Image (cartoon, rainbow, N blue to C red):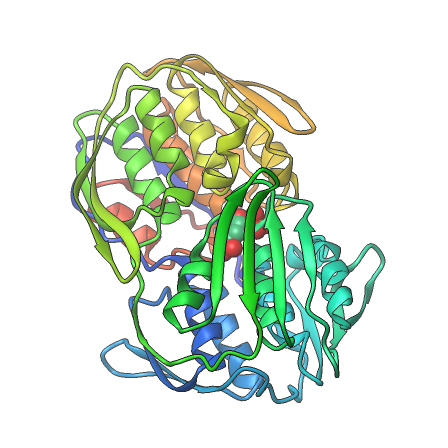
Length: 450
Ligand code: S3P
C-alpha cells in the first residue's frame, strides 16, 4: 500500500499546556528485525509492542510471502512461526515494501543467500531511493540483482545458490546496509566480517545475539568489526519492543516548544546509538529528564519528561553524532527555529536520500514559514528567531515522508500563525496513533476539509 493512496491535509495551531503521559508506538527498527528474525528461527517467536505502522505491516506480509506464519492475536501480540535460516520459500508475487527503505533492504539481505528469486517494489518515494549500497555487497555473496537505472526498485534479486561469506567495509554510515549483510551472512558458510567506520544503530547485533547467533563486535582502529558465523540455529524467543525514540521525538519537541507544557513519554528505547537528538536538546538547554533508566529485553529504556523550555540556544551538532539521530534532524530543525542563534548540522548527506530529500523538504517549508535556512550538499544551518518570533502561516509539502509531515505539524503548535501540510497520510507508516496521541496531550491539530 502506498502512503499517498488517500492523501489528506492537516493543520496545527498554536497550543499550550500540553500535559499527561504519551505512550508512543514500538520501535520501528526493532519491529522490522523482530519479524525477520522470528521467521529465521525454528519455532514460535512472540512479539509484544510491535509497531503496527504500515512499514512494519508490509514487512509482516513480506515474511508471509517467504513462508513464515505471522499472526496477530486478540491481545495484540504477534506470533511468528519461523522457517529457519535458509528456509525461504520463493514468493509467488512481487513483494511490496510500501514506503520502507528498512523493510526492503533488510529483506533483500535476508533472502539473498537462499536459492530463490524475489522481485521487490515500493511506493513513489521508495522506488527513487538508492539500492546499490545493498546490492553491490550482496553480489559478493553471489546474489544477482536486476533493477531499474541506477539500482532503483522495482528490482529482482536472484539469491546465491552457493553463497560465499564476505569481508566488507561498509562505505556509507547505514545500519540498514550493515543489517542486510549480517542477515545474508547467516546463510553463508564460515565467517562474514562487516566493518563499519561510523557506529550506527546496533539492534541487529543485539538481537542476533539474543536469538543465539555466534556474533561478536569489537572496536578497532578501522572501526567496529562485526564477525558472524554462518548457519546458526536461531532459537525463537519472546520480544517486548520498547517505544520508539524517533517517534517520542515529536511529543517531546512539541512540549519543549509550547508554553506551560509538561509531559512524560514512558518506556522509550535509549540505546546509545539512538539518543543523539536528546543529547542535542539538552545542549540547547531544553528541560528534558530521563527518569527510571533501566534495562529491558537487552535495550536500555527510560521514561522521558519534557517541559516547556523558553530559552533554547542554537548549537553546532557534531557530525559524528549524525548516525545516532539521523531520523531526528527534521524535528530538530523545527526546535532550532525557536532557539536564539543558529543551529548548524553538518555531515548529514544521508538526509538527502531518505523518504524524501529531508534537507530540501524542511528548508523549503521552514523558509515559507519565515525562517532563514542555509544549506549545502551535506550541511544546513537554521537561523533561530527565538520563542514567540516564528511567523508560521504557510503550507508545507510532505513529499511522502512521515517525519516531514509530523515535523511541520510540531512547527504550527508554537508558531504565531497555523501551519498546514498538504498530505498527512505518510504519518501512518511509522506513527499511526500520532493524531490521537498529540490531541490527547492537548495539541491543537486538525484535519482540513478541502
Ligand atoms: C534504520 C536505519 C536508518 C534510519 C531508518 C531505520 C534501521 O537508515 O534512517 O529509519 O532500522 O536500520 P540508514 O541505514 O539508511 O541510515
